[in-house]
Length: 193
Image 1: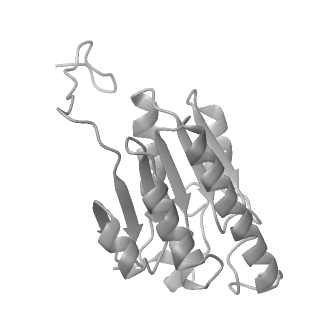
Image 2: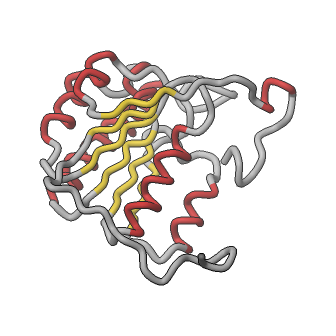
């Protein structure tokens, strides 16, 4: 048994008989959708995989994952394409500007997918962007259908569309039981952002 806080010298690795790129959807009203996707990025890093994260709605307020990813010795590209959460907490940007940014993000996704450089692509908050019509359903379905066969595609955000859920291989719904914010506690660094 290894000492506490260390890993064993030799660990068996599972190798699937057939490799296949999965579509994973992480949705729901609970906290932890982006955090779960970032955990997948860390796992992929451990396997030497290349990861691209495109954040559709984040970009106006600092998030710890930006510097956290820079500090890791991993092949992870992170693109913040949004201007914050449209219509929430006094976000000052008009819907049309949010839509323009989301449309640019769709183009970025297509370009990164077509490059063939990435093993995992995370589309953070794309479900929200679809719900409030910053992106269109046919665009998202097109991305799912154009996904390279061995690339894993992870879509996060509340309100995943039923058609997206139908096409996914794995869907997890994060349900809120209790949240500090509802008790008047402000978001905390390292936990909430």
